[in-house]
Image (tube, rainbow over all chains, first blue to last red):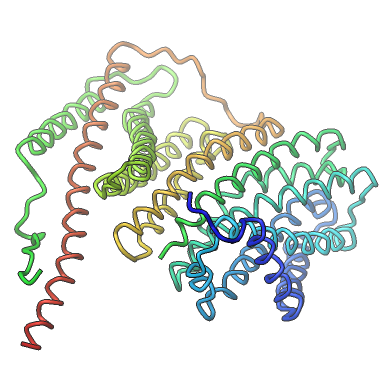
Length: 232
Length: 251
């Protein structure tokens, strides 16, 4: 392992702060991607025009909307790097690539969390689901852990696409199959949180364990692999 | 280096050797025998009728696909952790994944045809089937990553990492699908009898099929790997030739 002059954690903090500051100032996510996610939720309602069905499948729709939005968010987070070869500059600076990966992933977690808050609120209004206090605690835990998994895989494969310039179309093919366990676990847990399909609150918590394992495994894998994947 | 490195032409450089031609002949004869056994010599199954004959193709193709992905993972690991970072391992990984994707596709098609005749449906959300589809898509993605361009070493490193990540992904996908299905049992679909006893010749045909297809896999990977070596050599040689031509223009 090469010694870097700046610690991995400082690099991660710098990258995450920078990414979030760019989003805060440019408002691209809030002005463009968030409305997209909102319209997807409305379109789901058009496609499944039945109140009973809509309520039952609401957890799955929320997480599908999160996954589709995550593709755009990940592409956006690497577009700001490849626009003026910023990723190359970071690499030339010789900072730890694990730090860059962690920074990117943390910024993605925060952005995804914002999306989930809005999408869950929308599902409460549009799909008439009910959320208890206990359900809300479960949902926050699930969202946080699911985001770690999605963000780790997204940062990893987004980095790969950004390093191979102009090949961002590869991202959905690599990312969506990889995060399928997150979709399954998060949807089942959210069913418990919403109390739909006869799921009770207690049934939701075991899925949290699966999300935690997924997140931990790929955060670890990502810190090792990111440097190799983005190498020129 | 001023002299042009003679690079092999794909038209004049054979990918076969005496040994691989011998292997090819054995595979061909084995396939002929397997066809005879599967279509003519074995009897119909008591429950499944002639449908069982699909199994003599389906089981070997599924086996080869899984074997191919194991070979890809092992070869990628040997590339990543080998001291030489030998591109031969990378090309074996790539060749094996290509063959694996083809056989996994064949196995999905034959499996769903068999399912239509036996279960009455082309598709069932069974954990093994679902995981197989994920495996298929994951390796299609792996092949796309190999195609990203850049130097050979870059291709080898990237695809090596993706192949090793797939090894982490697949058990998680399988595990989560198993959990998912355990909540949603479907009783409406005719379940096949799990304890089908096979008569001697049928079992022999099945195992013989697995053996012949394994040899076919070895033969295909051997040749494909050599073709990839030639393609890489042409890439390298093509650059050398172009440089030499520019130098000649200057002189």
